[in-house]
Image 1 (tube, rainbow, N blue to C red):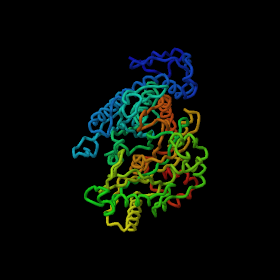
Image 2 (image 1 turned 90 degrees about the vertical axis):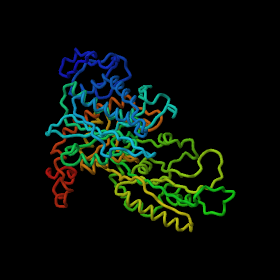
Image 3 (image 1 turned 30 degrees about the horizontal axis):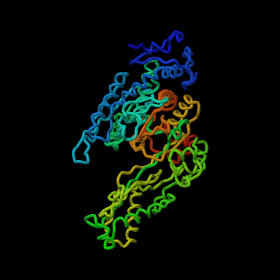
Image 4 (image 1 turned 90 degrees about the horizontal axis):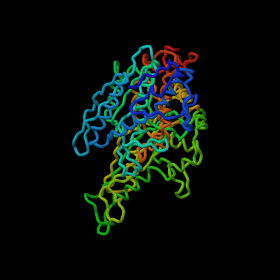
Length: 566
């Protein structure tokens, strides 16, 4: 029975009782004049002094902190583990939970069937793929449209895996909210809904139209999303009128300073196998009489990369562009401490405690800017504790490359095949060798000068009081490339969680302060998007500018927008 909170009312008469909801008990706190919450004082809250609508919005979010925590607790309790067929019903229940919330907040939502229908499991049976949620708030043709992508499924988790608490019972410890999915990705995904709710309650008009596309299979391959994105991007489709995209499914570089992410590496995953017999053999009885598969495989894998990380395969580096002077300077201001990073990756107690680079710039470029090749394991080899004197009949080595812009997974595969075939020929082995390419994805790179990034940077600076770092990441988020390829619109990666949130690991958490400030940043971001001048980008599907058009004064700087602005 809460009452709507109107920012136009006499603020001196405001009472916390006006916004009680869902068992929320008001806490005694003070609030700063800006967007950040002061959690160090127990004094009574100051009366509101509205300077602008967003100031009221910031304070409203602060007052509802415990409500947001309780809602996240409800979401975490739904065990939406996409990798476990027996939990597929819980994934669908999570999608329905968010669908109901969107409708409750006055939006439109539907759970559209996954275009791939069913998933074939390893045992030959099938399981239904969860639907894809398409939601929206507002459809004013005079406003820009922002679409947010997120996922509502989570990684498997058991307390016996090493969790300090029940992973599906959100537990707060020292301002940290521990639970599976708290930061990846339920907390960030739900923040968009609470932002919309705050605008509604404050009687503030949404400055842009909002669209939402949430999936339930991201942690298990995003089956059906590629098809859905390209289908919905067609003329008349759900995504066809979207002007800007935003994804909050990655993390800050550190624990304290926010960032925006403008680049991701791609991926190419391979296996190389060698077979020497139809059965495993006793090394004492048969050793010395057969050409052993393991010997061949170890030799082959050693030719891919050296101990310093240098890729030894011809052709891999040919499409890697040199670092420009402007790009080099971008690394100078990034907040990153090498010694802290050593502790995070666990090398401080190993050997000489060294990384492959001893300075910030080289280390970050090695993680983000250049391709890498990593060896992951050998299938078929004895790996248990103890001793087993077996000659394995067949062994399969697993390895992958992280790719950078302009590298094509298909071309990389051709290089890998040619290299391994040539190296195997040098062994003069009678064994059977094969190479298999698994999944691949191109790298993704955006521009920090794009208005989408400029708007987000201004929003982060207003809420946190500091300009965000512009970062890249070494991992892959294929959905970013799919969306840009399908729609030709800009995608922004706006991380809201800290580097130590432990997504996918034991004791995953979402800082309460990050959760609250995320909702603030999202609201501010939409206000900044609304200030962007010019036509809606989705109304123009211009081809790249010609050389003549590029020569028009100012055209180059506006080239990522619409030709009609020239």
